[in-house]
Amino acid sequence: MRPYVDLHMHTCCSDGTSTPQELLDLIRYAGIAAFSVTDHDTLEGYQAVRQILRNDDAELIPGVELSATVEGEDMHILGYLFDPEHNGLTSALEGFQHHRSARGRLMVDKLNELGVDITYEDVKRQAGGAVIGRPHVARAMSEKNAVRYYEEAFEKFIGYDGPAYVPKKNFTPDQAIDLIHNAGGLAMLAHPAIDDKERYLDILVGMGLDGIEVYHPSHSQSHIDRYKHLAKRHRLLITGGSDFHGSNGRYDNIGAQKVPYQALENMKAKRKRGDSDAR
Image: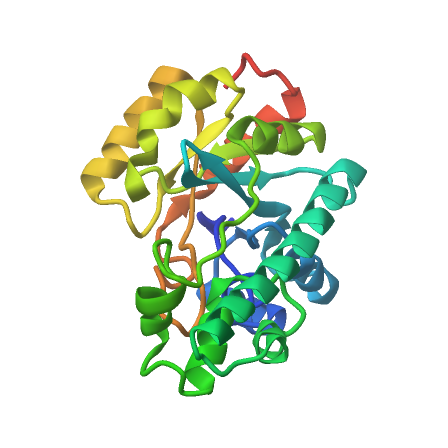
């Protein structure tokens, strides 16, 4: 058995740049034992990879990264090993897609009012059928030379304080955790070092959080050591991955985080027991 897994990566179905086929080709090259496609608020990338998987490929684990809001800040909750056909989960994610489409239109309208010459069709073309997000708006702006470089779209227009920013409609953390649990899965706090989301850990544990992402490109060795300690103290599972986004160079290459296969085995054991007290 190959010893490593990568349980955090994205396709072009959310904010990554790789198609499901391109992602799978990279996974085959990386030689990992198991992986999870954790696109933001959609299972389209997971389902697409599932359709083209070969018998000799690495094991595919159902995954998703849900967007939540706490005290006005973004928080991400990773879900694993759930039923990808669960009606409650799929219905909630479909509702998210409708909202994101409306949000994209509003951002384009605001940009037009500011003199930026792009259309909603430009944004849709960048999304390619994926859930529309700010990266697609930024790519459309860059393609139309409305900004000098990709990041300038966020810096001047669609960043959190930008004049064309439109807030996302997110879950609350307890809603995200419940949604994953109701679909039979495990809920984990993503990259706690980013914006110090670790400070909410006690609250999340009280909501039924199952684990914490220990291995992530934004985590130093001291972070990893601390999160392992916190996981042990709170009896939480550990997970991790590259948070691969593709050619835009965000985060790490697939398999680079060296997440031990034992982490996935522990998740499966917890999932099989279905015992919230046996973390």
